[in-house]
Amino acid sequence: MFYVLTLKQNVGNNNSSGKHRNSNPNEKLGVQNAAINETIYFLQKDLHPGKMVKLPLLLNTRGNTTFLPNRIVKSMPFSSDHKLPDILKLYSIKAESREGNDIYETISNCERESMDGEDKYCATSLESFLDLSVSMLGKNIQLLSNEVGTETKSPIFIIGREVQDMGQKKIVCHNMPYPHAVFLCHSINRTSVYKVPLVGIDGKKKANALAACHKDTSSWNPNHPSFKILNVKPGTVPVCHFLVRDTLVWVSN
Image (cartoon, rainbow, N blue to C red; front, side, top):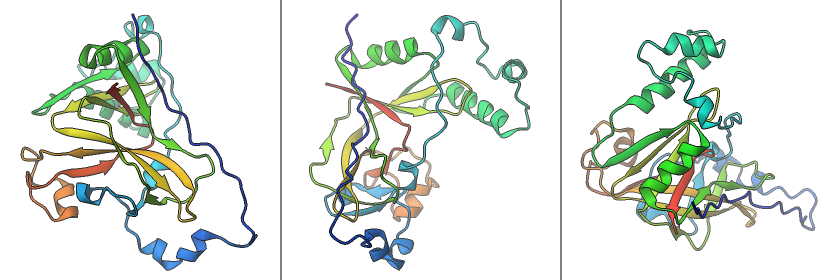
């Protein structure tokens, strides 16, 4: 079986130094940096070059976990139906611990019913991660990730030129907290994914980030925090957000 599987790598380092040793672009923003609110939700019209954003979640990574072979995963419990104690015992995790709560939340999210216009699945092995994606999008696909330079420290960015619309044929996969790799993957109708170049306040390229814009929010809960943050009503305008660091996105070539 043929797959076009491309996982983008981190943006390379740029260690070129300026003429002034003590010049610190972050210090130049001063109080302005502190005053910039974290970019949680935004309007699609604001996805343009020159827009300043604050994305601390783009710098945060969850601890690395790896996929287990499918044959091993199939022999292990993964259900909230009377099997949670067995799962916790398997990993020697206490139910009242943070890790125990993470396991419960991950399984609950995997077992929840799909929303209107949503196709979803949880991939618990590399085989299922590939096969389920191919079953939805076909074999000619590529895998995108957030690309962040290792030298990037400040969460303040400016959107650069050439924002790319990766289309609506996509699957967004969220890295869930679990002892081994589990990705909750879903595709939501009328949602586009964008690849967004980000530059630092020093003008140097720092990252390529992934953002999603939901163009139909008419069925969303009116109390969804995005509507309060943006001061809009359901179904009136597209609602966008950047994807957190460890999120992966399958797209059709």
